[in-house]
Image (cartoon, rainbow over all chains, first blue to last red):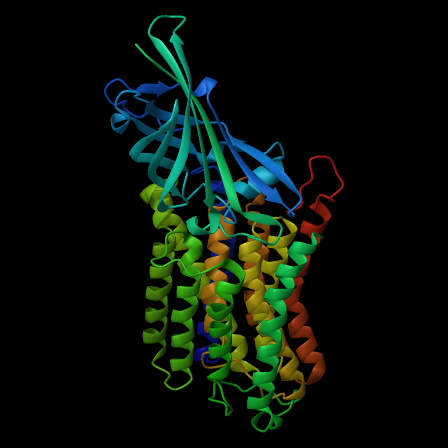
Length: 214
Length: 312
C-alpha cells in the first residue's frame, strides 16, 4: 500500500472511532447543563416588595396564523417592586424570568419554545427587566421605562403598570400587587422565527406580581 | 405540513437552487465537458481545470445572502450561537476560494482549519460556557466539535479530490440534506433546518450540473463551507437544544458516519471500480447511514393528529 493510502486509512479509522466517541460522549453528556434553576430573588431595594412567585404570573400573548391570540406563561419569576404614590420617581421594578419554565400546555411546543427558534434557554436561561424611570400617569397607573433583556439582547421598553392593591399580610408584614403590560417587537430581541408568517411580530407580556415585605 | 412552514422551506430551497444551477451551468458549460463519469478515479489529488472558485462562492455567498430573508437582519456583534453561523460561512468561503488558488502543505492546511474550527466552536459556545456547560463540559464539547468537523472536512475533501462529477457534491449533500431532514422531522429547529436547506439546495444544483458536465468538482475549496457550517449546525442541534427536540445521538452518529463512509468507499477495490457501477456503489455507501437515520426518525415521528402533537 502506498504511503498516502496508509495515511488515509489511518485517518479514516481514527475518524470513525471519533464519530462513535462523539455519539457516546454526547449521550453521556445529555443530562449535563440541563435547565438552570430559577434565579434567587433579587435583593430588594429599601422598602421594596419581594416577588412572591407562588402568587405571581407571567403571560405572553402572540397571534397565531393572524387568526387567534395564543397565551403562554412562564412559571418561575423572581424580583422586587415598589410603587410609591407620593414619590413615583423612587418607584422601581426588577424582574428575572426563568425562560426554562416556559409553559404552553403542549410538551412539543414547550421544547420548541426552549430551543434555538425562540428562547434558546440553554444559552439564555433568564430574561430580565430593570426599571430606569417611573412616571405616574393616573390614579394607580404608572409608565415604567426600563431595560428588557431577552435572548441576550437588551432594549429599552415602556410598560404600563397598574397598582392592583395592598393589604396586611396573613403572617404579618404587608403584601402588595401590581400588573405590568408591555408589547414588544420580538425580532428586535433576535426572536424572529416565522415573524409575520404564522406568528405575529408583536408579543404582549403581562406580568402580574404579588410581593411581600416585613 | 403548515403552509407557513412550507412557504419558509420554499424560500430556503427555491432561490438558492435556481441561482446555483444557473451560475454553475454558465460557468461550467464549456470547461466541464471534458472528462467523463466513466473515467478512472485519479490516483492522487490533481488540480482540475474549471472555475473552481464558484462553488465556495455560491455556497457561502448564497447562505450569507439568504440569512436576512430567512432569519431577519444579522445580529452584530453576534449574541447567540446561531448568529455565528453566517460568520463561520464567510470564513469558510474565503478559505475555500483561496484554496482554489493556492494549496499549502497538508500540515499547514489542517493546522489553519483546526484553529478556525476551534475558534468557531469557542465563539458559538460562549453563552453555554458561561452558563449551562461550565469549562469542563464545554471543553469536551468543543474538542468533539473540532475533531468531528475535521473528520467530516477530510472525508469531503478525500471524495472531491478523488472523483469528478456527482460524487463530491453528493457526499456533501447526503450529510447536509440529512441534517435538514432530521431537524424537520424532530421539530428540533426550523432555523437550523433552513440553514442546512440553503446549502443542500446549492449542493443539489451542483449534483444536477455534475450529471451534464461530468468534470465538475468540489475539489480544492468547494467542500469548505459545507464542512464548517455543517459542523456548526450539528454542534448547535446536538449539544445546545433541550428536551426531545435535541438531535438524538444515534442520528448524529449516523449523520457523521455518512461522509466517512463516502471517503472509505474511495479506497480499495471499490475505489478502483470505474464506470457507473462504481459511482452508484460509492454513492450508496455514503447515502446509507443518512437513509437509516431518516428512516428511524420518520418511524418515531408523531403524526400531527396524535394527542399532544405539535405543529408550528
